[in-house]
Length: 479
Ligand code: ADP
Image (tube, rainbow, N blue to C red; front, side, top):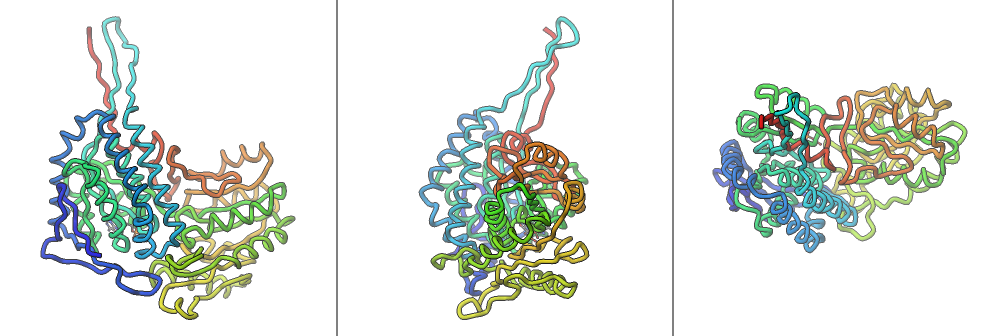
């Protein structure tokens, strides 16, 4: 598989013909090559996006929405192909990869409709002959930078609302997953999206491309999903031109189980929310707090579920947990478990790298449950981003609330209880942007998704996600 850059409606090689290899984390094999774009390519992509902006922003929302509907139909037809490429380049189990394509399509469908609903406002004037209008206009050229863990959905979650709003886009996907992005751009091309409206710059050098985005004044908005560390770098860089920026960063999600919860469902859902994508999602559970009176029951049910998770290559039959994305990710998981064990944590299942047979070629780690975790352990403070679930116990609502909020992160939190008063109290007081109440997957396309504190700023999804790509203008007039 060889993929180029997509700039101004055409596929082309990177300057100098440079390419980079994409490898399968399940066995180290080379899956394909992507064009290795540099600063000159990024500049050409911004030029193309800027040139396409006037005509694209002049279309009606209805017309722009119609292009997105074509994209949706093509994604539906090519869902298996997209999922297969994703499985190969980042290890996601095939069924889960198909689920991600469906989720990615949700954003396309939702914003295809929402393109027609960029409503303004009229506000009564101060004087009898004064009228005041509020208009919304697209911000301009958008640069989108996306991560490897959701190589398709993180792209559509940015590109669909940007296009619906009337913006043009340059995308820089993660270096681990350029091929899924390229396959999606083939769909954009087939859907007939006009030249320059969407542009793709794959690269092994994100700094060179990111610098062009930050320095070119025509780029008015940067949408980023990735690590808190890089998000802060981009936030600092955006200050020079006061570019608009939205950041979806890391998380450290608590999963809280009260004694009145359905414990069997809590165990099932905790496994779903923890081990989705092998624990490599910013909304994955990082700390399980279970009330001491139900700790034994919950832990037994949870460990039984985790032990049944089948680990393997993404495309192998029945795989539920794939490999970690790369060596460094595996080493971080190993370091977190070693640190916890050294400080007295108990390994209730897993706790080791899997190297048997075909697994020996990849970055596989056994789904792991740790008991007796304490706040001093690294796993309690840092995002592990792997298949390890730490269990802690608590005694009161106030205590668990304080402990759950005691982190710099604030993306997702999960709450298992059937007490309505408690649901409201904690939903209001948990310092998280996304709260799942008896719900392991709270992120839906029609609702805002985003973090508090150092988990980010801005929201993606729903009409809030559209606002990120719109400027608000006031027009006052005398009649
Ligand atoms: P992760 O740790 O999950 O790989 P990163 O924040 O490193 O997260 O990567 C997320 C995205 O940010 C990727 O597309 C990556 O290429 C990009 N990226 C990394 N460093 C920079 C940078 N300095 N400037 C712009 N983009 C960057």
